[in-house]
Amino acid sequence: MSAAGTSASSAVSLVPPDQAPLLARPYYAGGAPSPIVGALAHVPELLGVTMAFVGAALGESFVSARLKEIAILRASAVLGCHYCVQTHTVVALDEGLDRAEVRALCGEEPAQDAFGEDRERALVGWVQELAGQRGPLDDDVQRRMTGCFSEPEIVELTVVATATIMLNRFCTALGLPVSDATHARLRAEGLA
Amino acid sequence: MTSTAEAIEDGVLGARLWFYSNYHCNLTCTYCLTESAPGVPRRELSAPAIVAAAEEAAEMGFTAFGITGGEPFLREDLTRIVARLASIAPTLILSNATVFNARRLRELAALEGLPVQVQISLDRPDPDVNDEMRGPGNFAKVIDAIPKLLERGIGVRIATTVDDPETADPVEMERLCELHRSLGVPDCDHVVRPIIRRGRASGGDLGRGVAFEDFEPELTITADGAFSTPFGPTVTGGRLDTDLLVTRTTSPLRRPAAALMQIAGEQSAGQDARIGIR
Ligand code: SF4
Image 1 (cartoon, rainbow over the protein chains, first blue to last red):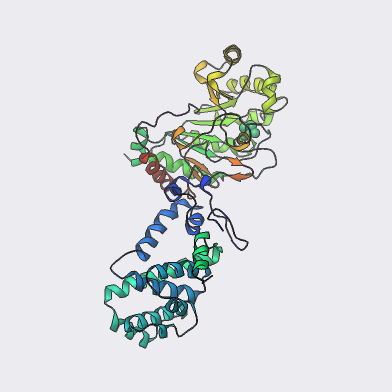
Image 2: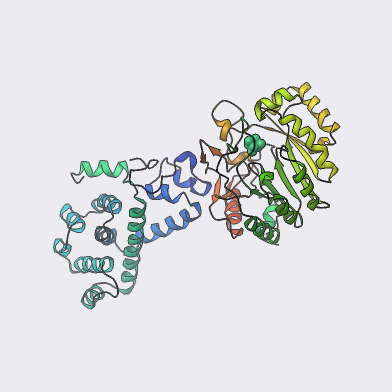
């Protein structure tokens, strides 16, 4: 499915390059953009601010990309977002997570078992709680997290996880199609 | 002075705020940018939305209004809307001038003394050729309407749309000018503009293709959002074109105005080769 198309279950079409609104044009400079951009382009005034936020939250920062991808992939799997799980499986592999780790994050509990480090085990359990439970987080889960991470790290990882949850519901509600490039990569990795 | 007023003064933004009052029309012209026709979705802007935007626009520094469509005068409340807008700033309405029956002409009394102009489409000096693109009987209705509007103190401008103004037959153009002068419309109120290859004109090789840079940025409010020019919110193949969409948000007006100023400001200097189609 190209970014200019629509899958059978999509709630919206993706804005094609020749219809890209003025504020969206920079995102179309290289041709059809990601499905998230193609959908947001329907409301161009939201595109710049959303992508800036998502970029700042999920992009390079003082927290390692590996930790961020653990949080993103686990939250996406718990929320059952097909689009984000597929897309971030590829990103997680690129960030050095191995297949067993990726499979564990995408699969059923207990995903922590695939991780040896305390910090990563604590993070997986905490994201699971954050994404999967209503109300306050379990005290033990919180304690493990605060024992392993600094306050700035916890704040950053909270933004990563909650921004991911927003994207999970956005992509799922709109039925966004996974891009051709992601499909091709997953096939090549034997993960399709 | 507001930033919008400064942008208008600096020529970054046009001083006229445009409204698409509705998209339906009694005609079905071959080159219509909006694929207007009697049965199309009306996409009407509500009267309160138009008036609220106009009031905000005046505070921001806009100094004129324009109303286009579709055929604006098909709306029953159009004259009341125009009266309100023209009490704020000079108002131009683009019309095909074929719907001025006795009742509508009577209603125009509400505009007496207000700065109102109607811009009427008249493409050729001969009825048969004119009506080829605009429909049977169009020419006669227009010729009939112009003096009646002028008699009522309504200003009239003539807009002539041709495939390419530079190659238009000068003899035919002169005959057209003689005609509008004879009807009481001076040369300064006659504009000649090219067919724009959008909407119903996009299928063939009529007119010229255009880009953002070809138009002076003029904030244009529609029921579907704000656009960068009144030539932007066109309909092609039944679908609204969004390549000249600025924002979906139209209220508060300062939001699309700020976005358009940002876009226009990012244009590189020297891109002033615009089409004279105001
Ligand atoms: S060009 Fe004007 S008069 Fe002709 S169909 Fe379109 S809106 Fe109506």
